[in-house]
Image 1 (tube, rainbow, N blue to C red):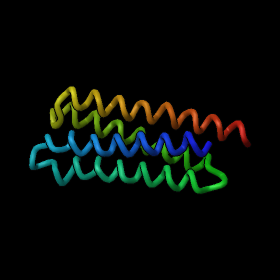
Image 2 (cartoon, helix red, strand yellow):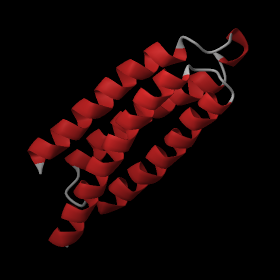
Image 3 (cartoon, helix red, strand yellow):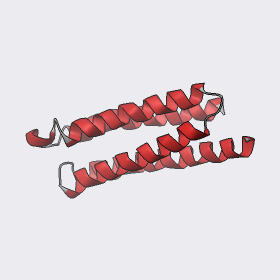
Length: 115
């Protein structure tokens, strides 16, 4: 699973870079609130992936990552609903997070099969 793990980590890194582009559109009043939360959530997502990859028993950490990813998706959606980011930027970022979610689902399924 090492190769796929690195691929999901690469996708998370690319999504984080793109998030920085999208977060530039936030109003000044939200740059240190919701935008900062989203930025921290992207960092945490990468951190959780690295932790899960290093552990022998990954399932618990992968479920924790899945919950975290769902929360991040809702924050990004909230930013779109408040019109803090342009719709096209939201679509691209949402697509990236969805791809990560699918890859994570495969990783979880693979780990369940190993137990």
